[in-house]
Length: 481
View: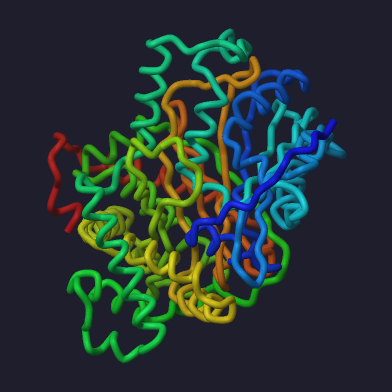
């Protein structure tokens, strides 16, 4: 059933406008996620969860419009839940391959722009248990915001997840706040100062569009911002490689076997690095191995990934929209030694932590939302030449979550790519495990499982090497130099 609603236009934030306008036939701007469940959810119960918990964010009842005068939100006068929730069954054996094909097809199919840009698909016959596939356009929210949405839809007990009118106890609220703090790391202690720098970056971006010579002159109120802007605009293009070529309009997705988070933490502690460092160096090793198999010599190459950095403070956690910047991260696929590769990633991450790249990128995205479409396309094309992949790493809740009476056994998601970037890599930790997801243009990697399957094997190789070098919890210079 649909209902008629009086609808008024609401201006869209410039950053969200940028993500709406970024969509192209070969790179759709939607976040796709999987929730693997232990039992089959009742359709009526799941829909009620969406109505009471998902749709409490009014944005999800709104259409995303754009015209010559700008972009805006407008409530869908004929909103119908049946248009957004579907029950599906996989053909054949309904195994990994069938689910992979189904999600790949969804990831290659645009959302209906005549409706709010999201959908849920309940796959009822997957061989390993029920699966929910969610698709949400990036202009509605970033990954951190969607984790908050997920937390609001779930509970830490099966019973409470069925009590839809249930008012959370103080204990539950405290528990969820703890989960949220794990996810949201406020990027800056002085958030007001960050906003000031963001505004400076936006203004500088506008001026540089009008007069590119300002880059060389170094004009601006903030030397740091100017340096980062100069760095971002003058980076060399990524070298040719098997993951960077002409794109088609078809995407392929894959996911790897889970890694035990405790084992990742143990290696990080032993080497004086971080969990993030270990996972990213593991990723670089997997990409290197695939390049070698395809006859693409990685020894003289360092490729980059654009990495989202959260700029959303905890007090703004429940807001939708996009509140993140981007940094360029070097992936040392040229290094064969796993320990040296880990050291290189660790050093790179330390340098990025003190960088203002993320603020500059958010400022540029705001500027892109203001600029004419042709100007946006030109900037995105220039930026996308400087990276081979989009990489996101989200620290999810470390306790099991329940939705509509079902336990979520595993969570996976895939990030969209922009411009001419054709590969997205997602890392998510949940309930003591780490999940790896890969989405890639079919023209680049016809079978992405050939890449993603190397993630666990690369981690096993790192563990094996670590076993050959006893440690006492201190950093060993001979291993990391």
